Every structure is written in structure tokens, then in C-alpha cells.
Image (cartoon, rainbow, N blue to C red):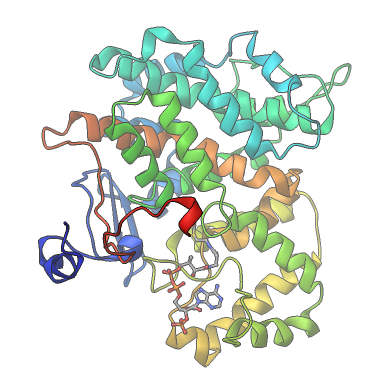
Length: 402
Ligand code: ACO
């Protein structure tokens, strides 16, 4: 007979930490966050410098290999990613199996997991070469799959990758080119897209990355692990917040309605939260949000959007929240999702695609963390404990006597 009482008292053998607010699950050399100071470094380089001077594939190389590439390494890496952008032609049949109104994240969960059925030669996780091929495949194929999800969603034919274009331009073209019409990529918009990818590339042990690591710890293949990460990212408390933030700004609609929503956010009896505000780790301004705000202005400027009502609401909401006692006391600052929705909408994406774009960019972080975990000699299967608070042991009662 198990003495449940004794079990309760024996919690010293493990830590009860709901939400893992103070439990480190691994060692990592990839990303450093100082949430109080609002600092984010990838392999030691500040996100501000990477976003200003780097490009997304350079950041991918940095996350995967630990150093910025030389010019020759960069050229070779870009070529190798480009070389893998096509997906197996049979993949297109997967898409047609979904309803047209399926959420593109649902489509991505299915299609990315299905990649393991096509690329058997990169699923042996004990082989470093196969792991790298899988990593490059994931980074290369995500834009193609994301664009296919978009095209299917809007009922247009798929556009194949054009590999003489850079990563972001190729993605924009696959999304927005239509047959019989020339599509010229706007370099300002393509640079903005690339920067958005950089800002989302990695963020240490967030929920989806932890999910990828946990799935990978059992030895699952990389495509299945990334599909698990996509599923976790979908939630509105995580990657789904960019979609939720834009929906909220649209619902608020005009500046004069902001106080009503601020009051709701403060009301303990109202489950409403200001989407795009607050972060588990940042108790200061999310450094990515500042860069995103600048990118929003650049994109709207390039597109000639003046007096965008959503931007007006966003800026006023931010101003009020930053001076409001409740938000100051709880250290609730705008996070990356607050401005990303406005930018993505201006670029032409429907809200349902926002989290897909986040998943596309975060794939490199997931895959870098997955590789790091597998190479870690301390790596064991992830197996959190629980604090059992259910019934003590009791005897089965036949149904006739219950
Ligand atoms: N609006 C109003 N109040 C908030 C908000 C918000 N957005 N976020 C937190 N609070 C309040 C909570 O009600 C709580 O108040 P209490 O102390 O009186 O109970 C307090 O601040 C702490 O909140 P927690 O939920 O405990 O903080 P946690 O670290 O668990 O949550 C989270 C962080 C999920 C991001 C939360 O701030 C939130 O829901 N924000 C809105 C969704 C969002 O923008 N998510 C994107 C995250 S960034 C990303 O994934 C890229």
C-alpha cells in the first residue's frame, strides 16, 4: 500500500514548479536573455546588431554553428539552403486533403510532421551528417510549405521557389506572385520580412522550444519534433499572440475606446488580457518590440500608408500602458507580438498566417536547440515529475455495488 501522506511530505526529492518559472531544463550556448535589462543575445551578439547589419541566413548559420560565417561560408550555406527549397511533389496532395478554410497552422502541423515520411535519409539522429541535412532541409522547406499553406488558403496555384532570390524575397514571391503577372519584389519589404525572421529566430527555452527539446529527448525524428513545436506555438499565450493582438487592435478600433479595454485588463473578474503585453522573462521592454516598431514604420512609410488607424490605436495603447500604474507595477511592456501583426498585415498577410510566419522563422531556433540537446553528453529523456494530489489507494468496487 502506497502511503500517499508520506509521499506528500517527501517533496524534497523534487521541486514543485508549475510553469517552470525557476527550473532550468538544460545548459545552452545559443541564446542569452536578461529579462530585467531587456537584453537578448544570440551566441553573444545583441539582437539589435544582428537585425541592423545581418541577414536571416547569416543568423541561421550563427545559431547552428556558433560563429558568424566568413564570406565563403555564407555563400556555401546560402547555396545549400537554396538547394533544399523544393518539397516532394507528392506533398502538394497533402494540402488538397484539407478544407480550404482550415487554419494554416493546422495545415502546417500536419505537413511538417509528414516530411519525415519523405526524407528517410535524414531521420537517423545519431548521424551528425544526417542531422545537418535535416536542419538545412527544415530551414529551406519551411518558406515553401508556409507559402503553399497560404496559397491553398486563398485558393491560388502554388508558386515554386525561385532560387536566385534571397530567402525573404523568395518567400514573398511564393506567397504573392500570381500566374500571368510579373511580380517584382520590393527590396524594402523584403528587408522588413527578413528582419522579422531574424527577430523571431530563437528565444531560448520558451514553451515551443522546450516542446521540441522534450519531443527530441525521446529520440523522435527532427521533422516530428518541429511539428510538435509548431503545435505548441499555435496557442494564443505564445506565438498565436500576434494574431490575437491584431484582432484586439481591430476590435478596439478607435483611440477613444482604449480606456474601456485598459479597465477590462485590470479587472480581476474579467479574463481579458491586453494581447501583445507582458512576457514571462522580460520585465522590461522586449528589445525585439522596439526593432519591430521601427520596422512597422518603415513598411507603412514604403507603402504610403498614412494615418493607419490600427497603428494609431497601438501607439496610444502603448503610451497609456507605459504610464499606467497597473502595467508599471506588473512590469507589463509591449512584446514582439504587439507590432508584428500591423507589419504583417501591411505586407499583405491575413491574420491566420501570422503564427505560420513565426513558426517559419523559429524553425532555426528549434533545430539549433534540438542539435545542441542531442550533442549534449548529459542529455537524457525529459521526464518531469508531478505532485500527486488525487485519491489515496482504494479497492475496486464491482459496478453492481456502486
Ligand atoms: N494584460 C493584463 N494583465 C496581465 C497581462 C496582460 N497582457 N499579462 C499578465 N498580466 C497580469 C496577470 O493577470 C497577473 O496578475 P496578478 O499578479 O494580479 O495575478 C500578472 O500580470 C502576472 O501574469 P502571469 O500570467 O502570471 O505571467 P506569466 O509570466 O505567466 O505570463 C504571458 C506571461 C503569458 C505572456 C502573459 O503576460 C500574457 O498572457 N500576455 C498576453 C499574451 C501575449 O502577448 N503573449 C505573447 C508572449 S511573447 C511570445 O510568445 C513571443
